Amino acid sequence: MSKYDKMLELNKRKSEEKVERAVLTIRTMVLEREKVSVPALMQKTGLSRGFFYKNPIVRGEIDAAMEQQAGMVDPRRNIISQAMEAEMNLLRQQLQKLKSENENLIKENQKLKKALSKKELNLIKQI
Image (cartoon, rainbow, N blue to C red; front, side, top):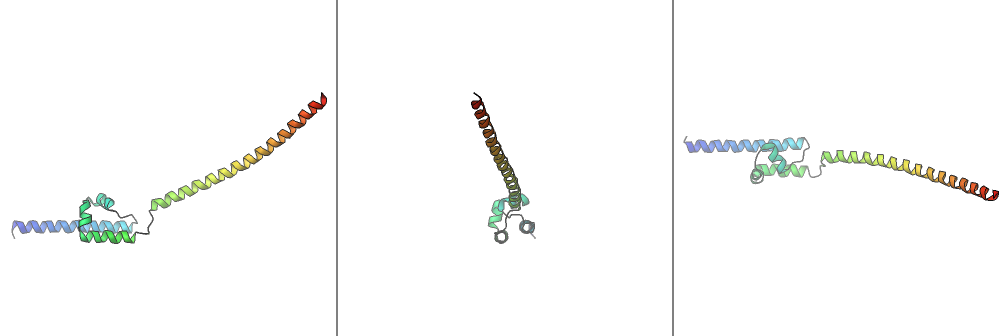
């Protein structure tokens, strides 16, 4: 076997390893319900952007994973939604409490105005 053949064999083996690594990473991301994207794959595998777009095997895996995840919602979004809903409930309770307090203060203010006007009438009568 010549050096050239050995070099071709080595390059072929490396390429197959890259494909295996990429496919395994894609499938792992799908199983872990992690959104599959080329930037995320680049970060996890250390492979180039072009590799994911140009390699037909890997590109097919990416397309299949993205199609499978089309209706999937990002889990972080669900957590944020729950936190926002809890905050909204807390704010609604505070608003209700403040409305009730405001009504009580209005009633008290009306009573005090009546009492003040009675005192003024009594003072005027005394004069």
